[in-house]
Each structure stands twice: as C-alpha cells, then as structure tokens.
Amino acid sequence: MSTRTSHLPPHGQTKFITDGGLETTLIFHDGIDLPHFASFDLLKTDEGCAHITAYYERYLELAKDAQAGFILESPTWRANRDWAEKIGYGEAELAELNRKAIDLMADLRDRYHSETTPCLISGNIGPRGDGYVPSLCMTVNQARAYHAPQIVTFAKAGVDMVSVVTINYPNEAVGIALACRDVDMPCVISFTVETDGHLPSGEPLCDAIAMVDDMTAGYPAYYMINCAHPDHFRDKLEDDGAWKNRICGIRANASRQSHAELDASKHLDDGNPDELGRLYRDLADLLPNLSVLGGCCGTDHRHVNAMAEHALAHLRSA
Image 1 (cartoon, one colour):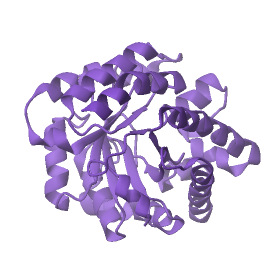
Image 2: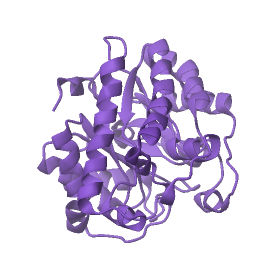
Image 3: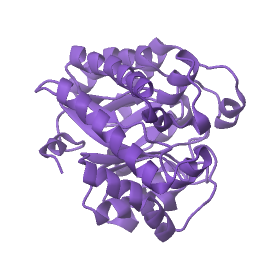
C-alpha cells in the first residue's frame, strides 16, 4: 500500500478532483459502442487504451491547473464476473484486463504526480447487478466472496484504495468493505440515491452509512454519493448528524431526471455545467469534510472544471 494514502480524506488536507461520466462521455461524445456500458472492454486494443488515456489526460490537466490532487478511478466499474460473462470474457481474461487498467492508471500517475497534484490510484468496482435497481441481491458474506477476486487483483496490482460506486443496497456495501479489510486495502463506499434521497432499496442515506459502519467497525475511509443530482439529496444533508462527517466525496449527475428516466432516454442530458459547479459550492457548506469533487452520468470536463472553479477555493478556505 502506498504512502500516498496519507492524503486520503478526511484526515489528509489535500482536496481532490476526479473525472466525470466516463461511459456517457465515451458513448455520447466519442461515439464509441460500449457493450453493457462496460468501458473496460476498450482495454483489449491499443486504440481503446488510447481513448481511455486521452479521456483521463484532460482531467489531469484540470487538476494540474487547479493545483488539486487527482483520484484516478480505473475504468473497471463493470469488470466483475457477471458482466464480463455477458460480454464473453473468462476469469483469466477478466483478471488480466483489471491488471491492465491499473497499469494504465499507474502510467498516468507517474506522468502527472507532483507535490501540488498528488495522484491516487483507485481500483473502481461497481455492483454485481444493475446500477440503478437492486438486483441479484446478496447477503453480506455472498457479496464479500463475490467481489473478493477483483479486490485481490487490485491489491496485487498496487492500487492505493478501492472505490465502489453506484451501490444501491447496504449488504453489498458491507461485503465489499469486509473484502477490502481482508487484504488491508482502504476502501470508499459510494451510494446512489433516488429523487427522494433514499437508496433504491428504500433506506435513508444516514441509515445505510450507519449500517455499514456498524457492521465493519467503521472500516471505510469515507463515503460518497454518486449518480444523482444534488437536488435529489441536498435536503437530507441539511439535517444535523455526525453521519454527514463521513461523506467526503460527491460525484453527481448533470441531469435532474430519475434513474428510470435516464435508463429510458436515448439522448444525453448534460444539464448546465456552471449551475452544477455552483451547487457543489452549496454542498460544501453542508458537508464539513467534502474533499473529492467529480461527476457521474452526463458530466464531462466542463462540469468538473466548474466544480473546481466554484467549490475548490471555498473548500480550501473552510
């Protein structure tokens, strides 16, 4: 494990940006067909690797200009066994692509890491099932065993942390946190919420965080919210509660549409980048430990640039 993890929120002082909506950018802006929304499939060719590299370079330049840290989230959100089987990959091929993804992130880190722009590599994993709807729901132990192979691969490849995003029910989050603990790997849990601010499985965000912390002895380094517009959860953050201190990152959607509406849409809703950046500035007033700014569906470098412009200075002065 790298000494760079000393930068990790909430204990480190570094403020980070990360990327936006990788898959929606590749599909809608770059015109690339991604089977089952799986960006890791691009890693099988040199041309695909070049697309991935160019995507991250744009964000790394933003971080360099902003003198902010950068979290390199590997393009492996769908790189687990079930989704790989749908595309046609076996376990050995899948493990090799997960390793290749981390090698690509390491090359970018080595090129951009500096005292003013520290770079962390995060092995990014997603839910076993659908990102919007709780499906293939597992017990804690089932989730722990299911996600362990990808987490072990990341640990051996030398990541600084593991981030699981778009988790929509608590048991899977608990299992992933325990699988990370099994290999002494820092982990970040990012929940998605519906337009009412609750997880798709129905739990309030505060209860989901409390459950994971209780069942893992507080193992996650921090929590994030992703794949929802700030309007969907901002009012929940206005409540008092120490649980808000555990939220250190936001990766919001550009669109105010619900998950069901986004799933049915054939066109990209990229919202208003400047407005989204200003909403992040408001979120900084509600989250005392907010340290990681990035985007999810529909966002791109314009949105993340606006987040940096409107929220970074405010975070640094807090």
